[in-house]
Amino acid sequence: MQLKVPQRKKIQVSSTELIKTKLIQTNSLLPLMIQPNVENLNLISWVANHREWIETHLIKHGGLLFRNFNIYHVSQFEQFLKTISAELLTYCYGSTPRHQVGEKIYTSTEYPASQSIPLHNEMAYSLNWPMKISFFCLKAASKGGETPIADSRKIFKAISPQIKKKFLEKGVMYVRNYGDKFDLPWQKVFQTTSRKKVEQFCHYANIKFNWLNDNHLRTYQICQGVATHPQTGDQVWFNQAHLFHISSLQSDIYQSLMATFDQQDLPRNAYYGDGSEIEFSVLDEIREIYQQHSIIFPWKTGDILLLDNMLAAHGRMPYQGDRKVLVGMAESFNTQQ
Image (cartoon, rainbow, N blue to C red):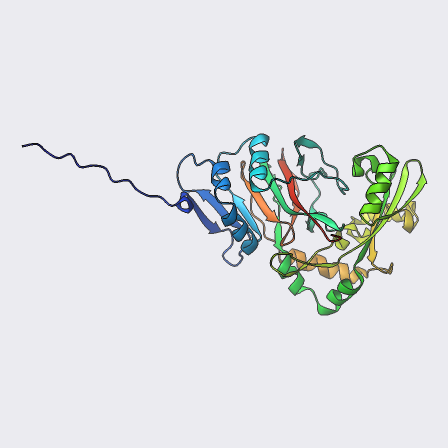
C-alpha cells in the first residue's frame, strides 16, 4: 500500500499583512507607525506596490513613521523618496543652513545642538512649497534631538477667531536681508552667484527686492496666513510669522540685534501683509498653541518620518551627542498656478 504524502498548502499572505501599524499616541492620529510583520521585508519594494495605500493613510494621519526596516544609508532613503514621488525638490530659497549629501537630500537644519527649532511647516514663508517632506534618522542623538510634530488642522482650530481673521484677511509679509553681516548670504539662499538669476527668481515668485550694495539684498514677500489643502479641502495654519518675527529670538540676541540694526535692516522679520506690526501677544499665543499640540517621540536609528507638509508641522528639540537626521522634499505646490 502506497502512503500518500500530504502536500503543503500554499498560504496566501495579503501584501498589507506584511506590515503592522499602530498609533504612537492613542489620543492622536498623527503619526501612524508602520513596521514590518515579516523578517527582511524590503521597504522600497513594499512602498512601490502600495503607493495608493500610503497616500490614503498620509492624508488621514498627516504623517507616517517607518521603523525597523533596516534602512541605514543615504542612498536607501533617497530611493525611498523617489519611489514615493518622482519629483524631488532642491532647497532653493531656503531659510536655514544645510548641506547637500545626496541627490536632493540634505542635512536637517544645522543650528547649534543647544537650540530648539519651533514647530513650523516647511517653506510656509513662500508661495511655493513641498507637499511632502521626509526625515531620515541616520544616527539618533545620545540624548534629546527629537523631531516634534503637530497637526496643522488642530492648530488652525485652536487659534482664536480674532487672530485667524487678521491672518486670513491680511496674510504675512516676510522681510529678509541677505549678506555676510546679516543672515544667510543670497548666493546660498538662491543657489547662484548671478544677480540676474536672483532677479528672475524673484519676479517669478512675486518677491519684491532691492540691491542695497553688491552683497546686500533685501526682499519682501506677502504670503498666506492660512492655506487650504488641495486634496482634503481642510484649512490649515500655514505661515512662519512666529518663526521669522524678531520676538522669536532669545532675549540676549534680540537685544543685540535691536541695538545693532535699524528695524528695516534686521536679518529677518515678519509683519501683517499690509506692513503693520504683528502684536507680540498674538505671536505668544500662537507659539503656546503649537506647544500644546506638540507630539514628541524618540528617534530610532533607521527611522523614516514622512509628513504631508501642509497637514503636519515639525521642529527640533535640543540634543547632546552626535545626531544625524537628513531631509528630502517632494511634489512642489505653487499657489500662483
